[in-house]
Image (cartoon, rainbow, N blue to C red; front, side, top):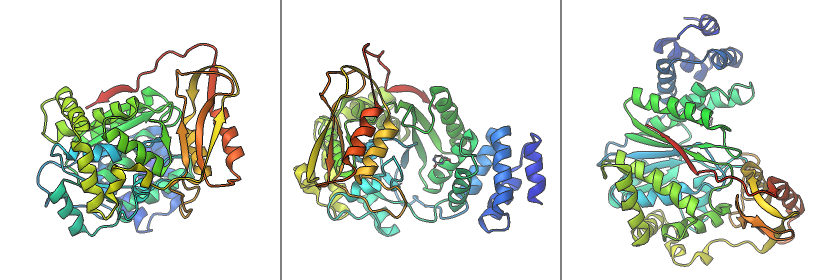
Length: 435
Ligand code: URA
């Protein structure tokens, strides 16, 4: 088999077999196929697309390129959850203990943040003592004991995807739905869960800017799941503004704790209940989504979800008293208000720009090696639809003393807010479900 023939076949609209796709993936991983051939193939895919069968074969080839996590020692149906990335998205911190509190085992690997989106692992590490690296034995044992563990993603999970994603990033081939779908699903499949719930974001702060594209991506991922025998459901949710009010690691943990107490922001609570309900149904703990949602709502209100969060934090060496006293979380030295430049209604908030603003304050990483400051971030005061008068506070920055970035950040936030005379039409948070 020769790579050039497979590139030509795809260029001319042909369909590659599982064997051919495995040849490309394995060859690229071991260095036999160079970057220039793989990028030519990725460009051919971008223009020609792939059939569902090809997409599933590519996914499996990438999932098989590194470690395969075996969750068989954990009893019950293991359900994973994945978000396509958002700003202020702290859903894992809430959903993992919430669904574990009704008996769905959660054995989850999460990532760190890069650029304008935060990572669950960084958020958890803002809790003093919390360990995100556990041995395989300890990870499995903890899930069997308390129903829940979240650890950092193994460096060798789907390495073919890592290499191909980096190549796509610099060859203008990221925006291919089959390539995105196989990239996401290869990591989920290698991580070992029996069923997967996907939170596909749409809007200014998301990868997919339109609902139509988000639905196509959701369909492609659900189809892969079906083809490889992992039940998959996808919820499409709005990311036209950040989720909840907090952006920044410790600030997001604080908001997650409030939500686990049943006192969280409405949008965040609703999304967590919906994603969690799909997990509970796939995990076999409820007949339907409405029943599961009600069950989870009770767990937020009766303290059981928060109790599970405390057990989880303590089991991984963290200071679980933060759940009772959020002032024990890292706190920034200064708070600076950013004011509205005009009066009217907030009609849009560019979530990506707010994510970048939080990163500039030190909450995120501009490069993989950058250190983050857990205490800093942004608390949003005005969300889409809120009335605002000139000079009123839009957000509060939590910053280091004398942070030189503050002026630049404040200007960025002011331009991320669109303020109009008319109140904008309400945009629903939950747009559709693909199963
Ligand atoms: N996220 C991924 O993991 N892969 C992509 O291709 C795009 C977003």
